[in-house]
Length: 120
Image (cartoon, rainbow, N blue to C red; front, side, top):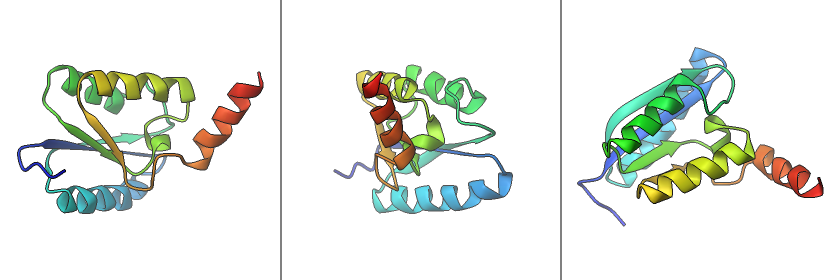
């Protein structure tokens, strides 16, 4: 459903700065197709971690009610920890913030994490 009043945020994370550009371009393209106005772009450099400054900022903006939709290329850009991703999905859902992944919702790293978690 398209909503011209929705406020979007793009979150990109990579180990190298040059790898942020393609992620951002892709997210912008999808947001434009969805008719979502991007109000903020957050870039993190380094490993995938829920405690990254960018993720903390995404959480803060969500609490303040300043965003309606978050774009990232895949869940592993946000975190590779399945428990952290489950927490974030639930948190965003309770705040009515839509989380959209341009590459789909289940990259192999999370699928493997789920399998390993279930075997324990």
